[in-house]
Image (cartoon, rainbow, N blue to C red; front, side):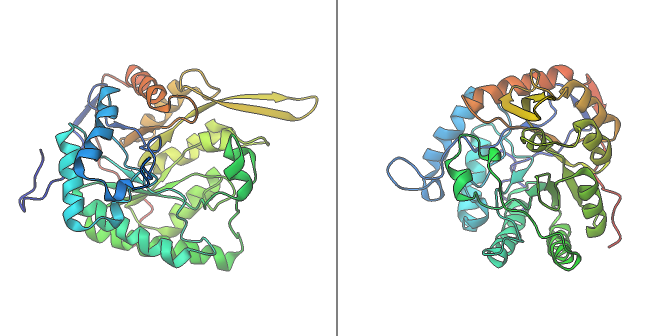
Length: 336
């Protein structure tokens, strides 16, 4: 168990000086596990023994790292004592946490903007308290009613951001506020790609991180979110080339994509990393060449996503170089 000088438990030991296929942090989101338990209670109020039982599922699948996505547990809303209890439980399970992702808590949500901004500040503090180096934010909002009913939610239109200059400036200002807080407590922010948001295109992502202007703020180019859409999409290679120099955390998932030129119809379906349309061997090589040294996160929708993620994890390890020198992250966009 990793304790600091103050006796608090920290859930990440840091990146090794030399990253290898075996020790490169590859995490998995805890989204497959529900927040509300069968008896109607929640993971939030669950005793540590319950957390440990769920974490054992992940270690049995071979994981050494998790991303405690807040669809499973809201670490930002645990008391300091419970945060430490959670950290001890994670370390007791033999796991580490190199990053934490929030889910659908946009600070620009029309109905919950202030609530989500306050939550994001608590998320930063929670990461600092237990030693998680990166918190992942995005501008995606809750599901529309149609999305909530769909087999694949991305096939129904979601909410879109307001791209007027004045409103976008408010969004930049809120992320600057979070960035300043995160910088003060030693936490990085990753901004996640998602369609129809300020982070929905490669150029939009790069411009946004430059406008925020903090070196501790980077990008999460989750271009699987774009590939799956049933419409014309930006080529993943172009997204990769533009965003990888700013990337500090990376959600990876793949999809089969079929396009029928004569009708314009598009069909997509989730796929393991090595089988889908995106060539992740090439993508990972591009990322490393651009300087990416952060944690990978294996995501998958449908089926036994825990096992598919484990397959994806081992695929990543096979295609990684045998040894890569670690470099501390800086987006290079800082002017604060």
